[in-house]
Image 1 (tube, rainbow, N blue to C red):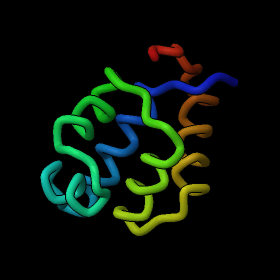
Image 2 (image 1 turned 120 degrees about the vertical axis):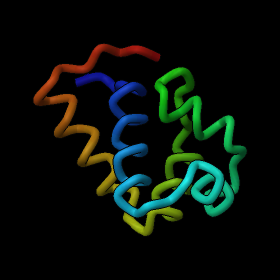
Image 3 (image 1 turned 30 degrees about the vertical axis):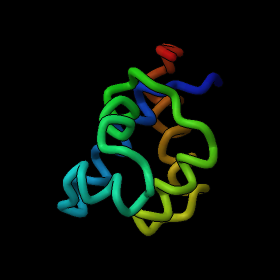
Length: 83
C-alpha cells in the first residue's frame, strides 16, 4: 500500500465539511495557511506528518484515525500515488 495525497485530501475535506468548518477556520485551528490547506485537500500538495497531526488535532480526531480512514479508502479504491 502506498500513500495517496489525493485520497488524504478528500478525507480531510470530508471531515472538515462534516464539522461545518470553512477552510479558513480549519486552517486557523491547525496553524497553517488557507492556501496550504486548499492544496492538501485538492491533492496538489503532500502534507508532512506534523501538518497532518495539526489538522487531525484541529478536527478533534487522533492522527491514527485519520491514517486509518486513508488506509481503508486506499485499500478499497487502490491508491494512485498522485503526489
